[in-house]
Length: 212
Image 1 (cartoon, rainbow, N blue to C red):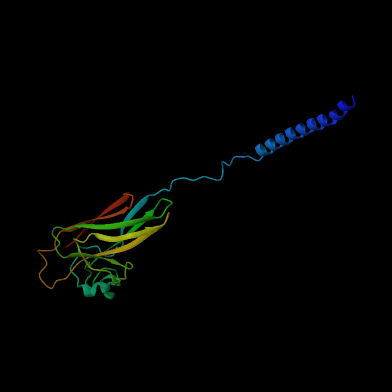
Image 2: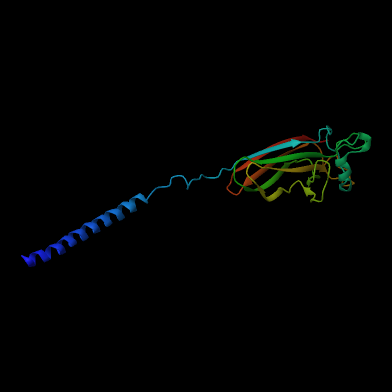
């Protein structure tokens, strides 16, 4: 009997030990599951949108007639307008039209920045000396190249931010050659302005003007 009594405390403590271990495991398992959660709000997004809107506007409202030739040395004066004509842009002292100026607006209607290339294609079969140049403002010439009508590259790699508008001005004129130009420069011309993005999206605008 004495020997059996000595074993009972050992069995009791063993049972208590197993029970404690079970509680510890249950507690650890419970703690693991309560520490787990899901996040459905942090990682969100959408694809960027890209859209273009192109507007070409004639800004030489005082120059109503057909074009006559002008020396390239006098282009700045032609843009400013002769004082006898009250400084009307592209009008000489006799009231003749010596140039046409167009404002080109390209609006990025999307929400991501786009890189654009612009072209200007002129159709003027009977105007051999028709030329064009980018200008600083409607009345300021700037130092850009004077391009023959066959040159079509308007500008390259222009970056336009989302919702922003990129604006340039283009001047068209008949280059004076100091020779008879009646037979080689007559009729009218048409132009097409196009802008395209790297992904192939683009917009095109056309304009028409009469010439002497």
